[in-house]
Length: 316
Ligand SMILES: NC(=O)C1=CN([C@@H]2O[C@H](COP(=O)(O)OP(=O)(O)OC[C@H]3O[C@@H](n4cnc5c(N)ncnc54)[C@H](O)[C@@H]3O)[C@@H](O)[C@H]2O)C=CC1
Ligand SMILES: O=C(O)C(=O)Cc1ccc(O)cc1
Image (cartoon, rainbow, N blue to C red):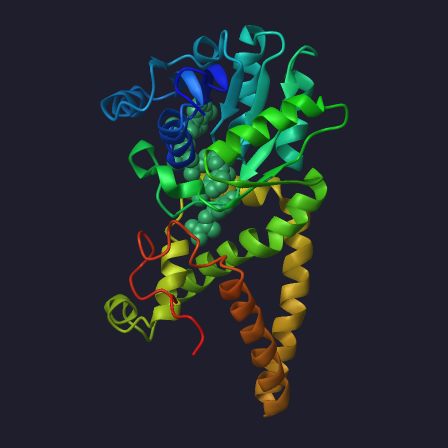
């Protein structure tokens, strides 16, 4: 993509945290937009975005940033998508593409779709890339490199609009796949949402133990526990919203998880080593599959932002 011929004339990023700032850096670096308009509610955050030179114009009103934009991306917690859509809807240019980056798709579509004018193209999206850090300083241009972005176009979406958004995400270094919002939410519940809940829970359990001191938890934490503490340091607002908005899929996956956990409990109680060994053998193969597919070391986060000591070893 040459700088003289950007994919979009004007893009608007509403919300300028980890994901918004990483998109801004990519749009600039890869010449994806002639003008990057940035909006966020808090003046302090907006000032920081300006200090970091993330965009070309800075707005406290989302509608001002969205006005005249060819692509508007909501980069806010999923629970705020409805309110932000209400603000920007009257300002949207006919033919504009409206998208988001939310970790949940069904609820975001239910919030946004009824509020959008008929003459814009709504293409929801979710980059499967992130870290436990938040805010405009957290972004980095390699975040999306070789990571998946899932598009969940709604019925009647113009394929040309989906294709343009796909080209945008590919310009950010991502691989793009399309699926239904319902399927997205089920898959993400098991590969991302429940694992985060497990991390929040285990770190909370350790912190509440009467017989183990806080300093012992810190001092003796093995690398597995440290990985959990990294994930459990993720943004509380964002993750509260994920669980409230992907309720059904998370509860379904948690029910299965609890059943499987109960059978492990039983195996330990009855000294059933075969059951434990058989499961651990299967799960090891899955980890090796991920490494072989390059899905782990391909992470831009790999060895950079993750807690040192995270499991970076290839299988021996
Ligand atoms: N953090 C991660 O690892 C990933 C997050 N996502 C999704 O991306 C979205 C944004 O997440 P992050 O960038 O990590 O969050 P963040 O906390 O770093 O940034 C959120 C931004 O939204 C702004 N904001 C919050 N409520 C707002 C409102 N009502 N109106 C206007 N602005 C508002 C905040 O001021 C901030 O600028 C979320 O929907 C999340 O589910 C997607 C992939 C990965
Ligand atoms: O930091 C991590 O380990 C993540 O899992 C990042 C992440 C968080 C939320 C998403 O919707 C997608 C990716």
